[in-house]
Amino acid sequence: TTDLLAWSIASQWSGINITPLEMNDIWCCLGMAGYMVKQFSKHIYGNNEFKYRLKKTCEEIVEKDWEKPPIGSTFKGKSSKDLDFIKLKAPMVLYILDRRMTKTERSFGMSRVLPKIFLQAMSGDLPNNSLSASHFQHVCERVNKNKLEEFFQQWVYGAGVPIFRVTQRFNKKRMMVEMGIRQCQQQELETSDKVIGKDRFF
Image 1 (cartoon, one colour):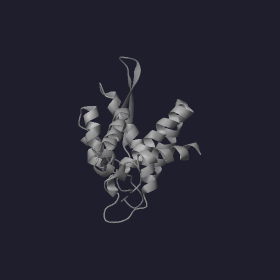
Image 2 (cartoon, helix red, strand yellow; image 1 turned 90 degrees about the vertical axis):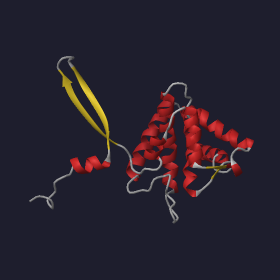
Image 3 (tube, helix red, strand yellow; image 1 turned 135 degrees about the vertical axis):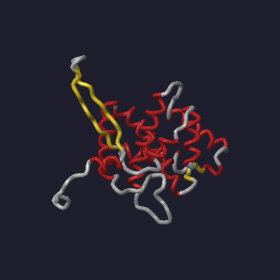
């Protein structure tokens, strides 16, 4: 009940007060509302429950994000039934973006981006209070003082979830185990990790 009430209140700000410019920009409004709900839940339930919910959401995204269109280009000439998935993934994308922005110096992350967008809507800088993905990216880049094109191409205009290759080796000189984590692309996995089945064995 608390989550539903939080979603309804957040949607009044991002979804009704601020509307998407086009159908493909709806992820911005849903993501902003969902991000505010996540921050509210962190304040209400505490950090441990917040981390647990993030873990469950990530597992659900990994399970559902299979042959799904990107959240930034879902509606291409046809209607879509993926609004629930966008509502699930878009807040997590903004949470990841916030974590990336706050790692850089002199950046306040989404806590500075959202008030700027709401202020632009109240002052009339947003025509008809309609938010586009390009304007949202522009505001994020101004706050972050850095380009975020690579991030948006991967998480907003790209589908699927990242795949990580974890390696470990024992360093005899330092007497310690060294871990290596590297993000792999799908093409690399398709060429290097082909599973030999009974249909491919000669």
